[in-house]
Image 1 (tube, helix red, strand yellow):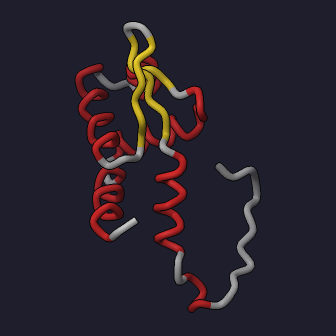
Image 2 (image 1 turned 120 degrees about the vertical axis):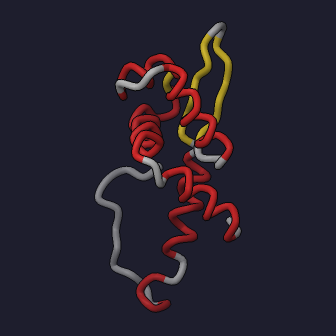
Image 3 (image 1 turned 135 degrees about the vertical axis):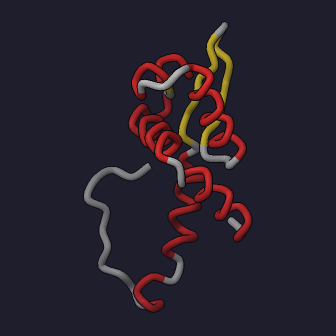
Length: 106
């Protein structure tokens, strides 16, 4: 990822509803969620949810596919991992870190 992509991704996540939506999609895993289901889970009006999902989509943090009449949104795990990698590239002053995942990674 380059600096511009990172800023766009972090900017999209720097809003409470979008952050909650993204985290819900991460929990949902590869199956994803419809916009309506996500709207209900988060207690947002469908129009507001669509706006926030569009911002996450434009930042490359989610993908969208059509399933009949429904749009299914999924977290873009490759993009999420690239963002995390960018943020931790030089952690620990360039020395190997003892950070080990505590659970399954995406």
